[in-house]
Length: 321
Ligand code: SF4
Ligand code: ZN
Figure 1 (cartoon, rainbow, N blue to C red):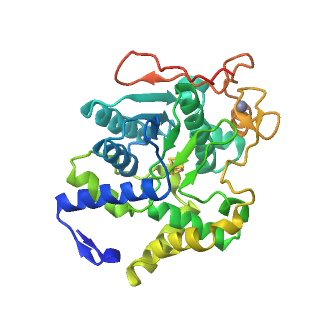
Figure 2: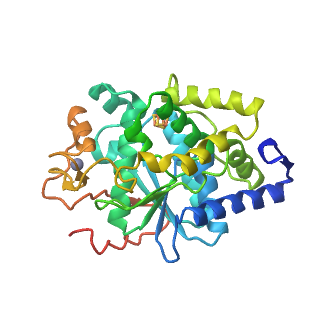
Figure 3: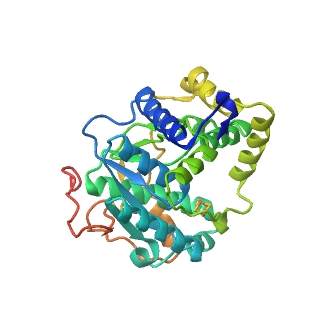
């Protein structure tokens, strides 16, 4: 494989080593995972999240997976299938939460009812459920499969529109805050073409279809624009993104942290930290007419189904505090 931004070409074996090295470097450079941390990987069944789960295992970092049934027709079914197969083949522990089973709604329905674009409703649900599952299961870190292309495209969009409040959160690590676990993006040094190649070389069967809800997504437009630029000038994406982190990111962090915008007030419905009476996820459920979370229920609890064993998840020591 020809990697023009590194002015190098690799065979399969060396490409795998290159990917592992880049992940190791990202973890070390940004203090993403400390020895003994319990890690939960957000797994969608796509190339990035499965490559991430695989690489962490290769690096000796034990991690469980968490997958959400988004209810986006055949796309979600195929994604879940890839995730389950990968977990089973590699003897990994998979937690699952299905939006329709748990809340009686799904991404297309909730988005339409709340008059939000599907990706906005989807992103909100994922963030909430990953946080909840991590707190519930006593995980210290949530690792996501965002790669260099994703991060450069988000940065490009935020700079283009000068969304400074979002720039403040644009970092490969978001520290734990307000009861939320730390969020890390260990693939930030790898382009998506590289994670796809990693999967192929390592026999990882991933969901290759694009989500049908992604049509018209602005983020994809930014990705295409940057891909064009990268073609003409290899290394532009990495230079743009890492240059931002090095030269400018500090200017946008108001309090030195890159925490979530939600504040420390417990949501009146689910107990998740939020900035108002009810968190954004519970508001979404309300507007979608979905099953509300019990007021008296445990805080930020998300029932999960275990993919590999029947063992219950060890409760987090502070989960019911
Ligand atoms: Fe969710 Fe949008 Fe991604 Fe589809 S494209 S999985 S709706 S965020
Ligand atoms: Zn809530």
